[in-house]
Length: 291
Image (cartoon, rainbow, N blue to C red; front, top):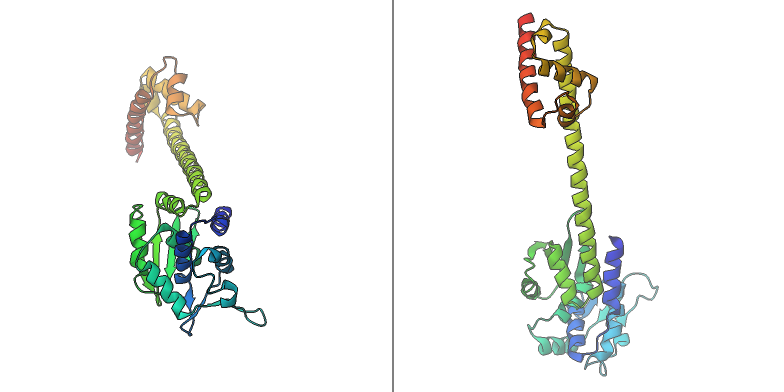
């Protein structure tokens, strides 16, 4: 599943955006998903692809002519440590003033790129948004997710808020709304493959259980048959019961259905079960009389 996670990230990074409003909404989402440092206007993230995505969409924004993206980057002199983004307060004010509390899937796509994660363990599906800053963002994320009936769960941990969804259908719809079409289709394909695999495993496990159950029953019946043959009770049995006892001894691993077909006058599985109940009761009586 790691290939799928990488594909989602690559498709997100290379996604083409032509509309200015869509680009600006995504940029705001990218910035609001980053972590603030002690300085009020300094933002950072350990995800280098966030800066690459900002570099790609920044020229489409209306403020690109005033604030050049490269001039806002702060790269450590020794090239060790995290890259930071120095965001002027007037630029941040312009962004928030322009968009206010409006939500869009473009904005959520940017937010997901900077603080969202997709996990695909051996069972289940797990998508999260880990929000570090800006009050009110969690409710805006949940508002969008509710539109695709995602039923998000929220929890607060050590100063940040985590919003998660665990439905494959909801995660697929989220990727589609964020215009990550290839990733959405691939996740659907993987989900079908996983469903087929799980069904096959259930069938195999069920068959294995039935085989074990049949073998245990056959072993128990073989013991009963041997006890009856070695006792005087065998000669008191009717001919059909005697034939069933000998058929079991001759076919120690056969199923009840196979035993029924092996008799001189074939009978059904239910008839064989009924006759074995009588034989088992007789064996118990015989054993009790000896003690």
